[in-house]
Length: 219
Image (cartoon, rainbow, N blue to C red; front, top):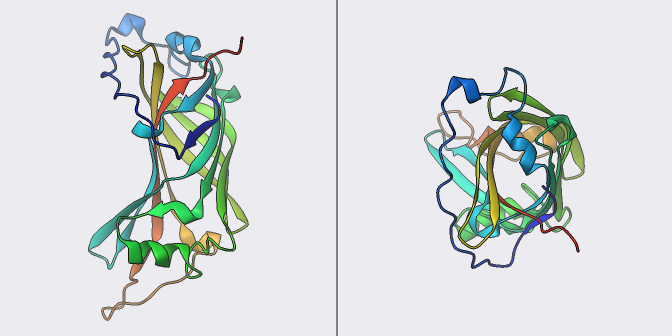
């Protein structure tokens, strides 16, 4: 998959539910090998912004979870169904686009205490390796850069399925997640609770819900 962008609204209708994959043991791929059926998906794709989300969740005040997303981003993704090791991804996010549904909280997150969007307008993930981890599960390692600090992370990506919708779009879905310690990227601000705990958890879970559309072949 390649170059998918979130920003402008999309009016493409929601795709139908992907067909269920066969449970016939004879049709299952051998352990440690990609499903041969995925070879047809090899190539460049682009994200469907109306059905995708790049988000995060973090424990707040010990008892609640705050969820948010980045609403502006550009990415490149190439998927190789024959040889997953050749797959690659790059995601460039606008730090000012963070949205948790609360304007005051968003302003705090984009301010100097956290992302400092005025000084560091972008954060980036660039893959360095991809391998098959299990049936329909891929492990993607890469470099995550926040506030000009780059550290390695690993994503667990699950292939959800593919389908051609009634409008002729060929679609594929992937879900991914990883957990980071925010202080390793210079996000060290915190307030303490009267009980002694932190107001904001050190651990942040990043979530990638990707619905991709195949890029038309030039010519």
